[in-house]
Image 1 (spheres, rainbow, N blue to C red):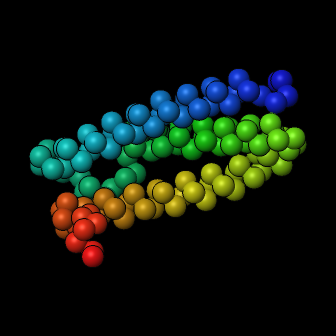
Image 2: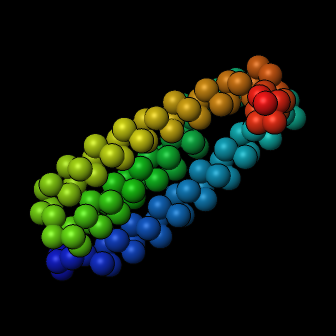
Amino acid sequence: MPDPPYVLIGVAALCGLACGKAFEVSIKRKTKEWFQGNSSRSLSTVNEVRLVIPYLGICFCSWVFVGSALTTFAVPWIIGFAMSTIVVLSSGLLVWFQLKRLLKALEEGGSEALEINSLF
């Protein structure tokens, strides 16, 4: 592995973008099915394979990207990836739980529940 791993940074970024696109398509399809009444599942049920797999891919690619990027600043591999684990794990869990709350609000109150202008 070259030091610093510029190729690994680029590959992780591209794979992360691909996983992000797959997650976007999956979440749009899920909300569309729910809105049209084609789905018997609750909208706030995010523990589906079609959502979890791309999201884990995003998290993994982010972990590799951040850990590899830190090594470009002369941070040792073990420290870089330990820091990356803390950052990606905490932010990944936060985003996942916020997504669940957002979909629950959408399910209970419709799109009006998400209006920012109605808060002011």
